[in-house]
Each structure stands twice: as C-alpha cells, then as structure tokens.
Amino acid sequence: MASDWLVTFAPVIGLLADVITQIGCAKAFRRITLSIVAGVLCGLAATATCTVLGPTSPHRFASAATAILTYLPLACGYWTFLNLNITSLRVRMLREILDHGGAISRSELLASYTD
Image (tube, helix red, strand yellow):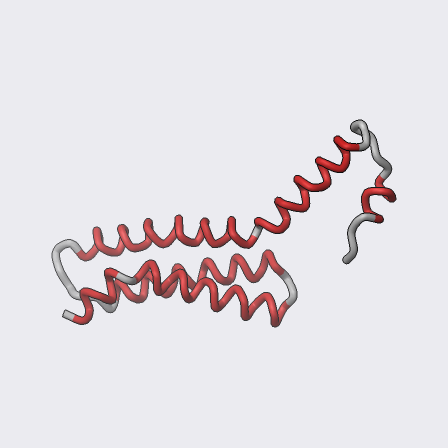
C-alpha cells in the first residue's frame, strides 16, 4: 500500500529533486544553464526510480508513463519560474528603448543596470 503512494507522488518527488539539484549545482558551479539541465535530469531519474520501486501490476508501464509525463510539465513550469527575472529585464529594456523614441545607445542602456 505504501508503494502506491510512492507512484502517486513520483512527479512531486521528481520536482523536489529537480529543485534541490538545481540550487546545489547553481551554487557549486555558478552556471545556470548547467544547473537547470542537471536538475531536470536528476528529477527525471527520481521520478523514474519512484515508479520502478512502485507496485508491480499489469498497468506498470502506464503508471510510469503517466508519472513521467506529469513530471515534465512540472519541470517546465519550474524552468519558466527561474527565467522570470531574465524576462522582466528584457521587458524593462524594451520599455526604456520605447521611452527614448526607439533609439538608445548601448552604453546608455547598460549604464542603467549593474552586474
């Protein structure tokens, strides 16, 4: 009975593994892209592991496919959440360009932002 819950929560466990791995890799390697890819792969492995450790039944493949196909949108949502800050900077820069009549020098635009 406990293994039924493991399969049910496999996508959430995978997402948790994704978040923890991404944060750890981002702190350790200081490379965002690498940390996102590592997090997604670790979360996918955790989801697959939970489904393998689950109960054996005639519908085992369907349960695994459902868990993995549920995890992937969760991972995509987390990736989108991580990119909100970059998107907001792009929108702010576009608004500044628009406020300057559609033309602003690169040095003026970069002077508005710090590292």
